[in-house]
Length: 255
Ligand code: CIR
Image 1: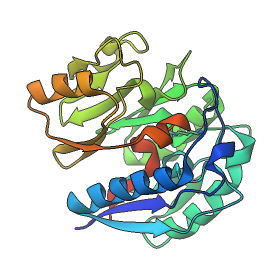
Image 2: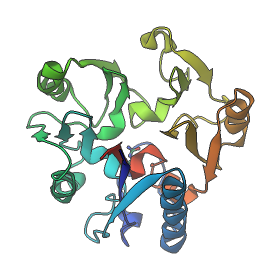
Image 3: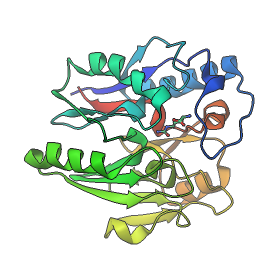
Image 4: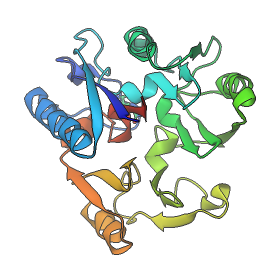
C-alpha cells in the first residue's frame, strides 16, 4: 500500500489570503514556493507518493488543500469551507480524490474546514470555529456512522482551527497548546505541551513515526526531541504568514 499526499502549488496571489487572527504581512511568493518545495520533498523522503496539483491563480489559499476534504480509509468527505473565497477550492480536489475513494459532500448550511478535523483512530474531533459549525458536525456523524466513527464537536475560540491547538505526534501521543484546548478531552492519550512562548507550535504532520515540523518553533521542537519524537524540520515562515502551517498543505491517505 502506498501513502499518497495530494498537494497544490502555491498560488501567485497567496498575498491576498484569508486572515483571521494574524496581521497581514508581505509574503515573498518565491520563498513560499521554495518552502513548499521543501515540504513536498520531505513528504517524498518519508515515503509518500506526492500528487501535486497545479497552482490556482484565482484562489489565494488553495495551497492549503487540507481544508477541502477529510479522507478516511472508507470514504472521503468533500468539505464546504467556512470562508466563501475558499469554497471553489473543493471542485478540483474532488476530481483528484475520485479515483481513490467514494465521495460524500457537506451541504449548506454546514461548513467545515479540514483543519478543524482531528482523527484519532475511529474518533473525529471537530473544531466548532469561525469556519466549522454544528450542522457540519451532524452531517459528518451521519455520513460516518456506518463506518463506526464517532464525531465530537470541540469549542475553538481565539485561534483558527482545532489543529492549530492539537495534533498527533505518535500513535498514543498528542502535542497540545494547553491554553487553547483541554487535554482531558482526549482520554488516556499521552500529552506533550508546547513551549508557552510558541503559541502556534502545536501543528505537526505525522508521517509514519516522523513529524514534519516548522523550524519556527525551536523550543517546542526541543521538547519533542527530548521525548524521542523524530523531527523532519522544514522552513515554513511564508506559509505561517498566511495563517497556515504543516498539516494544511496536504491530504494524506493510503492509496
Ligand atoms: C485561511 O484563513 O483559510 C488560510 N489563510 C489558512 C488556512 C490554514 N489551514 C489549515 O491550517 N488547515
